[in-house]
Image 1 (tube, rainbow, N blue to C red):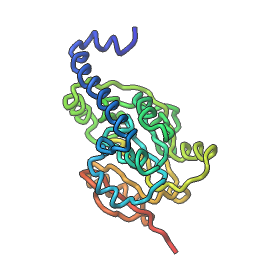
Image 2 (cartoon, rainbow, N blue to C red):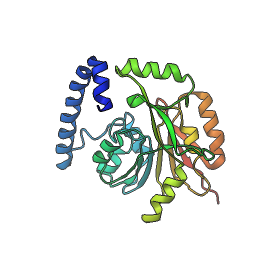
Image 3 (cartoon, rainbow, N blue to C red):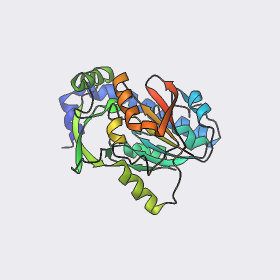
Image 4 (cartoon, one colour):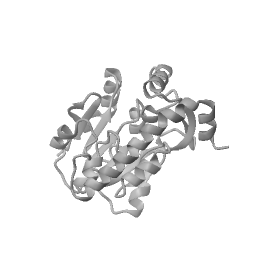
Length: 252
């Protein structure tokens, strides 16, 4: 018996909770697609700080790398860029929502994997799947409380799943081995506290993204990330809440 059916039999309340949100999402997706077909962008700005980000990123036809894409729409900073600015890119998402992401983002390549640091030797890693607050198991400070908040706040039950583990460097090397080499104009990271480990799987001296948009949850983690970035990047500003935008420092 499929695991999803087992879960609903064990927790029948979940079935009712999920039906209405599912239908609402489906109708919203169809409406958005219809409007976009006619060039209407009113439903195509899912990122909370949409205008603030566009002020810092004026280019058209750029290239992005997004680590933590979920379904490719919810709170997504690159969705509008792809739909209305001609951007393309790579979206990395370890959850099964990667399939929905590929449907929503047909101009981009979606890779289903979790990014890990250099030195991580296993082929998989355990992810605690709790929808939009999914997190690498024990990968964030206060992990237990984090999962409890995710369950209570979203009316879900978290579960541990094994997902492919890859280094960001390897993903980029693989992509550019079959695609023309592009400058990365924007790299975003939203991995629920695991951003530093993602960065530790990327050679920042060989790969030189123009901008980094990083979700950072605590001042302590921000200090760690900025130490890791060193003098390669300077802080442009806090775009919204926990999202910080950094820009590459070009040396003469």
